[in-house]
Image (spheres, rainbow, N blue to C red):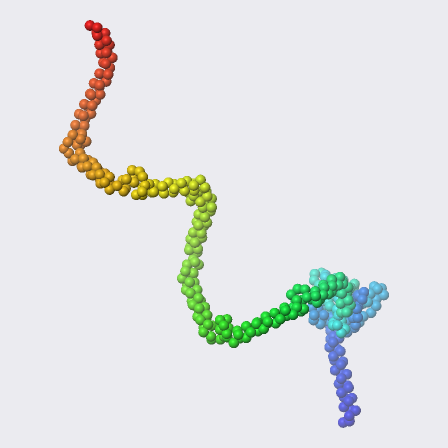
Length: 378
């Protein structure tokens, strides 16, 4: 086998590989279920025969040929779809740039609803990638210029040392302070990593502080579980919640009443006249207490602090009690008048007769006086 023969075999195999790759890229040969459509474009924007047709990013067909239609005044691309997806209302054919290095493909959106007339399909082109970038830059020229101006002003301020970053760049003192701050932060981080200090000990695995914190957390978790199973369950009960709500409502009503002049407590808090009356009463009570003290004045003070008078009062009360006891037990006139109804009635009749006699004497007195005056000369 000669060298030229080997080179020829390799060349033929390369052609076969390129052909297969071309067929794969350009599309699968037509089948019985393929749908062929003619789409008109004002500008195909570099679309070539063999480019793919994509639906939602998936290859769904290919562009077979592109020709000029003088009647319609458009460039017509014959499109072969491998799936029966005819255009409907809202359909779209759009030429898209494949990458910044070139190439393109046809983006197809079948739409939905009622099928449309396939004789007058129209597509659009987005232009190449650099054209789109140029259009975007042209549309945002003012915003881009403003952004560049702001960037230029920012750089000028940084150069002049304005602001924190500008001072950090131009001020040696601030640079020194920032360096010291960074060094301190690194030192703190190293101490934490080495387990120094309380926080470092907490971060250090199986340190006493970490074990204590874990034990504390376990205790808190245990207490929470006990609370959930005890008082916590009571709080979850609907009846208890209703009672708690009622208590809160009563407290709210009470505080509302206290905030107004309704009721005695509210008036005591807000009514200045009533408060002043209470203060006057308190002052009077204080004055009365002072009068009742040993250094005060008045009969009550004497009764409270004079031993002789108090003993005399006790003797008088004892005497009155003895008299009352004697009257109750008898004998005697008062006892008879109180306990003997007949004697009471006789005494009442006697008093009645005495009253009548007194009235008669009062009526006879003017007549006696008249006769005394008349017969006085004789």
